[in-house]
Image 1: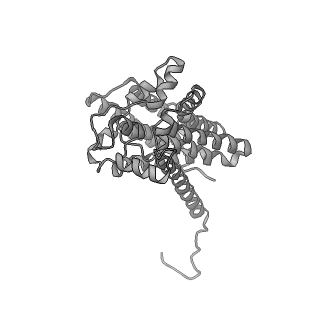
Image 2: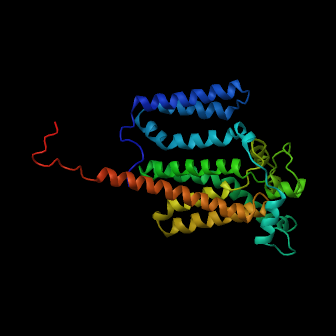
Image 3: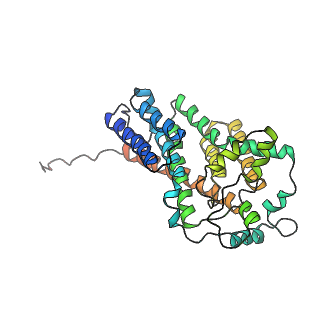
Amino acid sequence: MTSLSPDKTGSKGFSWLITLAGVSHLLFVTVMGKLRWEHAAADLLLVGLAWAGPAPRRFLRGGFPIWLCGMLLDNQWLWLGLRGQIHTGDLWELERMLFPAPGGTTWPAWFETRTHAVLDFFCGFSYAAYLYEVFALALLFFFRKSPRFEIMCWAFLLMNAMGVVTYVVYPAAPPWYVMQYGPGPADLTAAPSPAGTSRFDALLGIRYFANFYARNPNVFGAMPSLHVAYPVLVTWQAWRMGWAWRVGTAGFAALVAFSAIYLQHHYILDVVAGLVAALVACAVVEYAVARRESLAAAPVPLMPEGDSRA
C-alpha cells in the first residue's frame, strides 16, 4: 500500500504551507487571548520540523493531520453557537429504554454507587492512556517507514472531524451532567467535570483529569465517544500486525469502552457511535488509498496507429 503523499518530502512549498499554518494559529490564539504554553510549543515545533530536513518533513506528512486534529478540538468554541437543541433528558431516556440497568436506570447511574478502587485505577489509567496509544502506534509506523503511518494519521483526522460535526448537529450532554444538573433544558454555564475520573486523581494524589477537563471547550460533546473511537482506530490499524497486536489493542479498546460508561462520561449509545465513527473513517481512507493506487497503476491508453491529433 502506498503513501497518501507525494514522494518528494523535501518540497519547499510544503514547508511554507506548514509554516503558514503554525504561525497563523499562534497569532490567532494570541489575538483572541487564548494563548497557552501548549499552543506555542506545538506551533513552534511544527514550524521547526518543517525546515529541519527530509526526515522531519516526512514525519510531518502524518504529523500535520494530527496537529490539525488538535487545533480542531481545541477551537470548538468558534462554532458552539451553531449547535442545535442540546439533548439531555431525552438521550437519558432513550438509553434507559434501549439498555436498561437493574432498577430501570442507566448503566452510568448504576455504576455511580458501585465503584471499586481497582476499577477506578484501571479505568482511569485507560482513560488517560487512550491518546498516548495513538501516538505510540503512529510513531512505530513512522520509524518502520510503513505507509500505514500517513494512512492512520489521515483516518485520525477524518474521525475527529466527524466527531466535531456531530457535536454541532447533535449536541448531547454526558451522563454526569444529567446526574448533576437534571434532565431539563441545558445549562450553558455548566462547567466541565472529570466525573468518575476524579477518583483516579484522588487515588494517586494528582490533578491529571481535573486539569484535562478544565480545558474542555465543549461540555455537550458526548456523542460520539472519541475516547472509544481512538483505540478502535488503533485496533484497525494494528490488525495486520498479528494476533498479539489484535488481542492487545482490542482488549484495550474494550476496557476504554467500559471505562467510558463506568466513569459516567458516556452512554452505551455514545460508545457505539464512537466505534462506528472509527470504522467509517478507517474504511474511507483505506478506500481512498486503494483507489489512488489503482488509478496510478492503470496503463496509459496508447494512441491508435494513424491517429494524428497533433
